[in-house]
Image: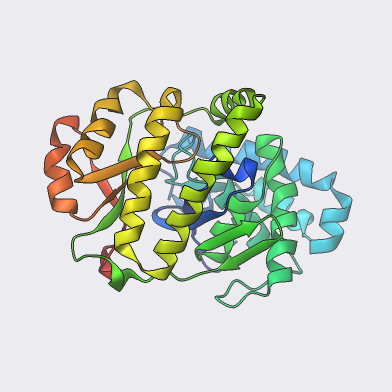
Length: 325
């Protein structure tokens, strides 16, 4: 049995959805509001016995998948015999991370399995070498492909390192700090739950279809990608005024060019934010459902402005350390 509990958190891709396909930068952060851990059914921790059994079955299939990845197993010295033994004892993944919301539910599971069973592993800390980050990304990409068919490896990388990741390119990924004290006192990045899961494949397929047009790609590269890069650079630099200008422009761009990915019930709220300037909304992941990201210089005012939507605004990132998600 386990000697200690290791939690692995959800992640939020703040910037880079769709843009990374065309070469934009991206910024991903761990989100501690949701977490998962490997546990045992006999520990009486589960909230849903049947869900725990399903998780146990899924992990058995995952273990079988890993057995067929001989190069991966050799590289990491993953102890699959131990994993099989613990699965027979009732191992499962206890998780509060919602599935289909683009916040890394499978990434947290992959990180947990790697941390538990890899005999050779990179130590998670705030000073991981660039090559170690890339090696981890490659390992996690192959592991998480079991769940998605194809994976960048970023979600489990974020879950494992538990630090914001700045992706300048596929081969230039670094850990970064984001200066909270540069935010206004009531400024925040927040989430809105749309109440239904999104389907990543649908949004990506629609986007790739649009990218068949060279005019569309040029428009994305000349306008959308610079907006993403500007939002990331100003947030990291702590230039909150320029940051909120960038999020306003991003929100307006997505309303015009990603309208089909925005849940219809939230289009009025999207427009209201742009009209009043109280807040700006953007897609969180591929859109179509799940969460919507918001940016505001006054979370108090934004809660009042969105009170008719009967949905909780969950702060992800605020001025004060203890209030961050």
